[in-house]
Image (tube, rainbow, N blue to C red; front, top):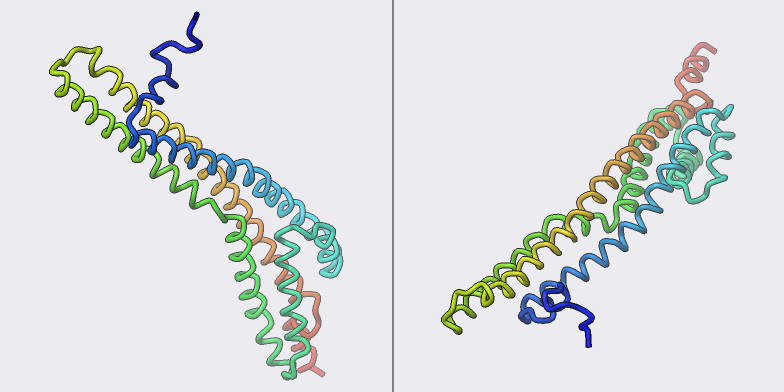
Length: 240
């Protein structure tokens, strides 16, 4: 009967590996499965966030006034800009209702909104960056975990040389082959994780830049269009 897999096949080598090497390979497999789950999930969420932020910022700039711009953002309830503007508007309304004289409100409004927008940007980036540190961990740790399996396998191969009192290639080759597979698998886990991590960080930098631009545009419109919040109304009041 023809064997389904030759004796030199990778699966055959792995099945004959030591318990420690098998544990290392199993751990690397779990790391790989989880990292690929994160990669596929983040490909959807991060790219979707980039698209929504870009389109939302463009729509906000094209809107005729602040109210229309906020209404445009409301059409995308899951957009980071919608969440950001909602927090800013809520804080703005709270300040507007506060029993503080108008000059004091006018002095506070811009700093208050700037602080709220900065906190909102940080919160959104934190949400979008969730689980990315695991990819960085895989990228840094997986090669060394695989190398540990390799070193252990080579140690076992040398032990086999001593036990059989023979340094023939047929004695050491299987153990060394099993060991090197661990390094190869470690690199196979680390390389995709590294590429994905760098890609996602690049996209998130774009998202951060667009949100910062939106925050600046939002503050400018508040200062221009909300009568009690701009310095012009103050000068007009003094002239009267």
